[in-house]
Image (cartoon, rainbow over all chains, first blue to last red; front, side, top):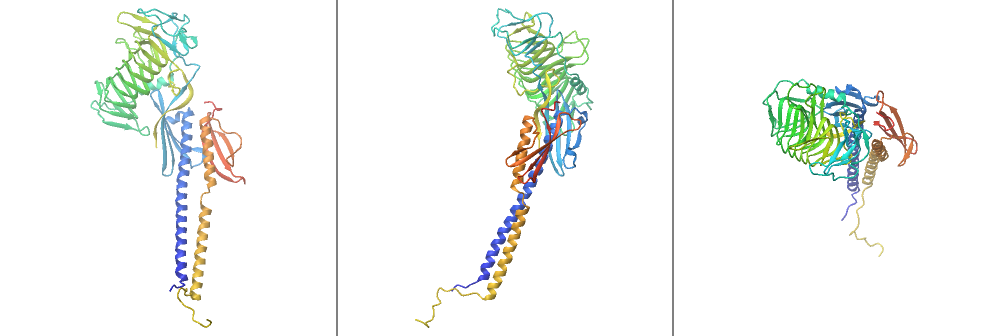
Length: 421
Length: 124
């Protein structure tokens, strides 16, 4: 026989209600916890964005040393900002923090292109025309000598390109190239002559990454020729060599700066780095220097004797970024940028004196030069463009320039995210 | 027939009055506590309105970031009244502080966010 047992039933119902209540309290607790975490994260993200915007617009040099700010004049929103001059580009470091929580963004910056200064070719006016022959193509606006451009018959080859010769607007060039940015040249000079620390001729690293949030790893390789091989270097690292530095194809460099008297990049190398030399840079065949890379020849003093300074890009190599030469004083041995057969440059070439090309060379971007040169085994042609393609519209619309080259606009933009934490 | 005994088989035995009273007290107490907990949890929980308003403000910030055009006038969006306030950043000509506040239909402040923005109008 069944019993009434009202107490048992009530206790069971009470237990069920208690269970539901605890679940409700627990859910509310976790939801609230998660919401607070999310809202703090969002606020730090906003502060991080604020920091990025400040670094993109500020001209205050105090940020070069690092500066901690309280945003919106309250103690809650603190950010630490730092600007680092990194070769021809800048690096921005933003840290937004609140108690134990920190968010970090490290990025490189560059400038948009000023369309009023942009051109496929800028050739200085030396009172002589420029001639085109073979399969030459010039796409984009051009600043050319007043003597103009004409088709020429060279090496038994007639001009086979577009009848307009220049597919774009032609304007008169000046007798000198628009100058490189003085302040950026000063930065490069300072980096070239930085306190290098003790010489380490036996330096070796398997894999080395240095964050831009920490101090720069400066490696002084001294004045013995050094071969960089079987290594992987990335980030905040500067290599110095007082003589020849050879970068083997087994080495990988990312975002690294290299300063040496002469640099040889061996055939098959891949990476993105900024290489600066005072005498020569030789990139051998089939190399790939990814964007944003830079090959720069810097001569702040002219040597009395020696070989002409040169940057050469070997056959079928590809360089994406900037190639430039700079000589502070006029020299009897003018600097040359030489591009080999089938080589492709995506970006900007600024040859203060001579830009020399071989067959099927291609530039997606712009060439600013004092003189074009085409050399065969027997003859040297000056201001003759033979089988050279210069394609300004072919350059990516997302390409950003360094303020070193005189086509950069004043609008600073993010070039690359390097660290996000 | 009248006067016959009722068969007990299938019948429920009644509870005593004391048992019923105790059960009643327990159930009332438990229900009372449950109601209090429920009221507290619902009162203290973050309202979905606030979450939605934050999402709306973040979306406006994102659009302003992309277009570099900061909202100048108050406007309504997704059931909220959004009031923007723009202040120039000291010694930084290309930058502005943007404060966005969301109000509900009763003109009660729901949430606000702030960010330093680049604006198209303020040239570097």
